[in-house]
Length: 276
Image 1 (tube, rainbow, N blue to C red):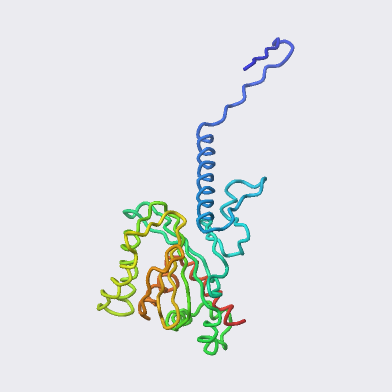
Image 2: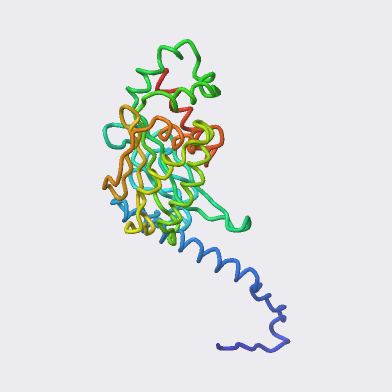
């Protein structure tokens, strides 16, 4: 570094400029690192799902990429993870809402496990529910607990698309989590004698299946209350049980959903479909 000196009589001496604060530098570096990790995570998720990898505009800050996805429609991106979902799934089912499944370790650290999108067949919704709810306004339907109960109860084709965002998720963890969450719903709707049904469901998730970050699990209620389970596009099992279908969907749109905002969006979009 070159130091310039001037005679003190010719140029007044300026006070030294304060150097950058160490804490500020650390905070800036930490923010940049976090943004880079988030962008890399989003890139992996997009590649695994076969979508174009989103790129922020040159002048946009790096963290803006979390809310952008090439070709993504409004409401199709889970905001915390940046995972994007197609607005239409197989057989023309429409995306109703997206959310996030989180869990905690020892009640202290929160972990984002998977983002999810809830889909339903619009024609089925109208066929089973429109006549009953046509006299209600859209705002009334958005607040109706009975509407969600009817969606859970009727033979409406629906799909919950799960996209894994936690890189260390094992199939054993999936079995254990479903055993607890689905088991509680089976008892809620069917009583105590549901152990065999629960085991038939969790047994589908065999040790041979791997779930790296970006993997996709689909839980679909098909006609006649058949639950179809797919991993990475491959069907791995199906079980005909109205009780099981209802119990699984209740996790996402029931009284105590994994993500309350997702449930609210689902109900709002169901109301829009019924009023269309």
